[in-house]
Length: 314
Ligand code: Q46
Ligand code: ZN
Figure 1 (cartoon, rainbow, N blue to C red):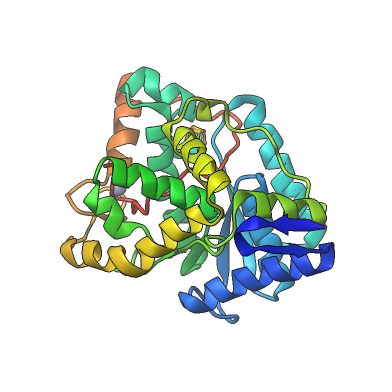
Figure 2 (cartoon, rainbow, N blue to C red; figure 1 turned 90 degrees about the vertical axis):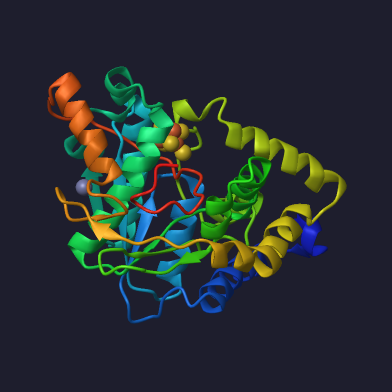
């Protein structure tokens, strides 16, 4: 029996699986994320959230393929990639694998040495860029990620703490394609907590990587999650109310205030606000300062997502 305090309900295993899938399909319909006829690219990291999401979409009859971004982070990457490959093979689904080092010019954990850009910042930028590029190259108009309620509430908390109004305007379970070279980005798990996703992955016997990326240690987003977990303990439903209250009442105000003009990067043709996109600048820095050598093997974990699009670094 699984007890969910914020819903004031308890579920047996089959009913929990049903409840979980219904939350996902309701999210898809509420935000018109995609239709059954359209192919969906699911960004998978080998963790519980993205694999649980892929599992639900397959079981609900959606047309999907997975995309694994191989970050080249030691054993972590190798193990997470193996989980994604096994998951896809067992279900007969297509999995695209992209080696980030091939695109950036160095494994992601070496980028800091040559550019001084923090590893997670270079990683986040590269992931946003490569996700969008892969979607366009392989003909997918929409990318789905496994961000859950805890991720989204923590991101919102961080943006509010620093009053990042542009980030607040962007934070949404679904971001549209505002340019022909932008795939839509959706988060069908935004109504489900981390605990609920873990419960679903367990009940569905999904073999996922439990370890976090080694660079996640000490991340501010984890501190924000702890604060929110403490609030949730004394007030079940606090995270849900925080996120959903924002989406209903506050986001439209921030959204109206934000507007950008988009161009195509003169080097790679992807979307940017300036002449050269942030990814091309990063790759150029890496090449010039380190001399691009080949790639190393890699792995991934879905990063916190404040809705930044491929051209945004701040
Ligand atoms: S950003 Fe940083 Fe994550 Fe990239 S380097 Fe690892 S912790 S995977 S969410
Ligand atoms: Zn570019």
